[in-house]
Amino acid sequence: MTDSLSITLAQLNQSVGDMAANSAAMLAARDRARSAGADLIVFPEMQLIGYPPEDLVLKPALIERAATALEQLALATADGGPAMLVGSVFVRDGNLHNGVALLDQGKIAAVRFKHELPNYGTFDEVRLFEPGPLPEPIVFKGVMIGLPICEDIWHPDVCRHLADFGAELLICINGSPYEIDKDTLRIDGVAKRRAVDTGLPLAYLNRVGGQDELVFDGASFVVNGDGSLAVQMADWEEQEVLTRWTRTATGWRCDRGVVEPLSDHPEDIYCAMVLALRDYVDRNRFPGVVLGLSGGIDSAICAAIAADALGPERVWCVMLPSRFTSQESLDDATECARLIGCRYDTIPIQPAVSGFDAMLEGSFADTKVDLTEENLQSRIRGVTLMALSNKFGPMLLTTGNKSEMSVGYATIYGDMAGGYNPLKDAYKMTVFAVSKWRNRHKPKIGLGPDGPVIPENIITKPPSAELRPDQKDSDSLPEYPVLDAILLGLVEHDKSVDQLVGEGFERDTVVRIERLLHLAEYKRRQAPPGVKLGTRNFGRDRRYPISHAFRSA
Image (cartoon, rainbow, N blue to C red):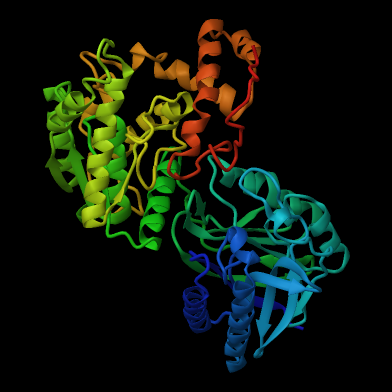
């Protein structure tokens, strides 16, 4: 029995399905932990196969490969170096489990399964896994260690059970996606409660990195049994921290260690968009991105995000002016590209507009010019940008924000065409906030330039799609502070029209916005993926039928 432990917490990124790369990264981290004098190194949830694996775990070939890879990792521990706690997928008695294995002295020394399976929001583990039994502690160097897995600590039963069975400390591996203000909830709302309830110190290890529409912020930490914070790891970056644990007269305690500052708001949102885009582009092997730079705030902040994610040299901005594009927009787009330091080209769309006018002249005879002609301009831009993507390889970014996507203020097969949208879950007022923040700060994970990246005029001028003379967004929509407040009620909190009217909003406005919200569902189903920022992103969290007749008023 030992009275001290040195445990490395390895907050790493993952590549879903790439067990060779994930294994190599774990072994390299173990070598560093060995040099630091660690007894044990811990990795995040499902580090071996990547999280969330979704239906990949239903493939027998993946399960077999994961089992083989885990055995190979176990053999590496025969050298007498640190043991490893590795999250993976396991099959027992024909059932599939999300679990964690202790690898020590050349073998798989113990396995524990996740008991509480989340089945809400972005999670659907109930359809993939069987819950494990209430777990008992493992024994490592004579110390009883409880291994709750992610959701297991969001409910009291697993930690209480582990404490009742003699656990002396808790190590919780996680795949906890970023949401606004979630780091406070994890520490104060969950981990400290479990620690104080059981009287046991708890190490909370989270993964970091993007995975399609999810992004993981890391921000791992350790709290002691009295609820005090002993260690706080960085957010948005891979990090390995050696923590030191001591047996005291009142039980085990983690020594005070590194306490990194976490990103404030809205830096956290900006970093989420940067990291999610970086991993999406790199994992899908695109050389870079291309996007339409209109002179408006949405495309400008997307260009800045792309430069911080990939470096300006991998960002290609294209101005696609029509006869309605103002000189102000041309100047703003040119200056924005200069500040960012990216490639910038101009391709006028008027020849294609004229061609479509001539082509459709007979079919459109005796009709008035309306939204159809506006949408044609957007679709011509989409075709042009996709042609550049096809010809040269960069992924096309779309730039519509959540306010627009909520009410359908976007053109399907036009400005909605593309491979990824960093702003998909960002309301317009959030776009303004992160744009102002980025002009004053460079994110710690950013690869873009220092200093302002968006001309001030882009931030202050009235938003416009510039698809007809003197057009403003406010011609079709309420002012964005009002629109966003209504949408927050309808989308994020499922409030009714009557509830919002009771809060002071005009009934006719709320009724119209609710109607537009439901009508636009078919568009959102065809939108590209984009990073989840809040609790109710479209697609993974908020799942509505396209065809339905319900209205709350």
